[in-house]
Image 1 (cartoon, helix red, strand yellow):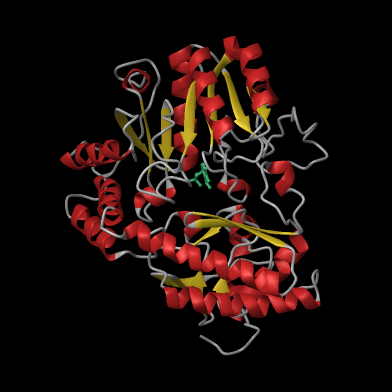
Image 2 (tube, rainbow, N blue to C red; image 1 turned 180 degrees about the vertical axis):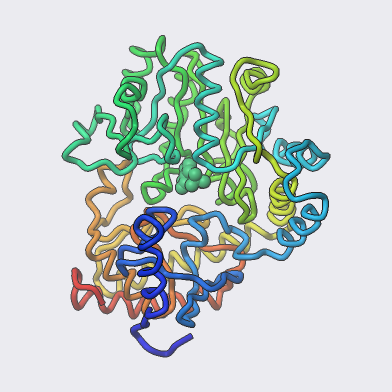
Length: 446
Ligand SMILES: Cc1ncc(COP(=O)(O)O)c(C=O)c1O
């Protein structure tokens, strides 16, 4: 790693210029432009806890494929499972023993579910789950919470981080489409509620239950910096949806396996359906939806809801899930993972306290939110939206310039099992120096 306090990104900038000529915005996912830098980093390779960019810098990575690489980049067990499955055939588009075995493995970790189907991305799997819930209930409406994210599909792509000018009152938010191009007619089918508000939830569910097919939520709302549901709220969600015949879908694309082996919040509250993505593939692009037998059997060819796809469940990718599940089942996996977080979060809080910076570290398992300008735990999106983005940008740029990669603007950061305590100590040292810059010029890029 360079000893310089300010990295130069000439190689990334040259590639960015070429990329902008042939790809809109020079990227293939809009979030890949790191706002603290104003451009994407072009990466040469990822290895374990590290990213190496085309300019020869090594970064300790706290984006970690937006949470997909919980095992670190290029975990050897996943690589060898994939290589072995590749020898069976690259795609096949056929069933093999692997899909069955891995479904059995998954169901052991999610005892509320009885059946599994595989899809490709998180976006796709939330969309399938909502379609199946609609087919199962014969109703159209969907509830989602403000600040929760369920992918870029037209069904659930609302009010992830809406502008407060458009978002309406805090206790009855208006649906704000996350993208242009979503048909306005879809607005009629979505209801946005504030997270952790039992009264608003009960009012809405009791008055609209006859139209509502599903309630979808992140059990831990990492997409708004790691908001936790209160026990009372979670219990109300389960009891009311069950009483009123609304399918409860836990979107565990980000939260699954993050805190423990299985559902983020354990097994006490069982949803009707669960969707998984990111970590479950061990870094490979595959997702899962699962749930109660009678709901899952709404899928074709048993029921009427079409679920199909050339790329569904290739053994190469399903075997990566199998390898991932084996890795997280190793004794001590979560003890080690959580110990890394304990050290990181304690260290960060200590830095901000010592330097007199108002910042809230919301560490929940192996991902965390970092909110400048807040000094108490946020409960919902409106709390989160009070954060100071300029300070965040200064801090993140300060970290990147010293070899620690955080993504901006991302509502969540995280580490992998490949990170070591030595990496965390090095990170804290860098963060301390980046925090010193924040103290000097809070809104100025370091
Ligand atoms: C909770 C949640 N659901 C769904 C998605 C969409 O997943 P993907 O990016 O694989 O389409 C994401 C992605 O960040 C997510 O965090």
